Image (cartoon, rainbow, N blue to C red; front, top):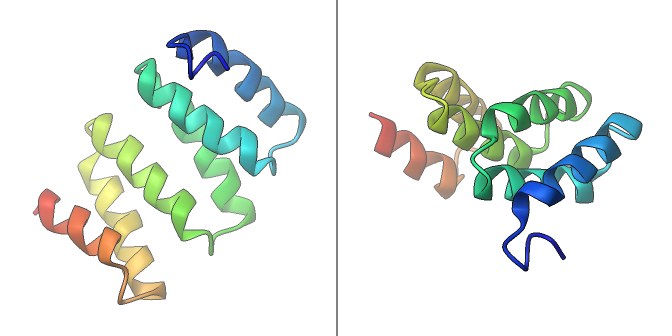
Length: 104
């Protein structure tokens, strides 16, 4: 509700705490991504995404979110590595190709 009413900063902490309690909570993870983007706190989101990928490396949507966070943080080389991993697993990934082309 906080995100929908423009109070994304207030939504960030509950999502973060939910992930501390249960790092596998995908609803909280994607809520945190959205709240982090809207409140410009992507640097705090990236470790949660990395944590999730350590458990589920095949989750390309999480890897793509992490790549986006890394780009916003100025970590282009790291973002490219994640996008290349996405393409290694799924060479037809249009989203990974598109972002990788933008970073070239």
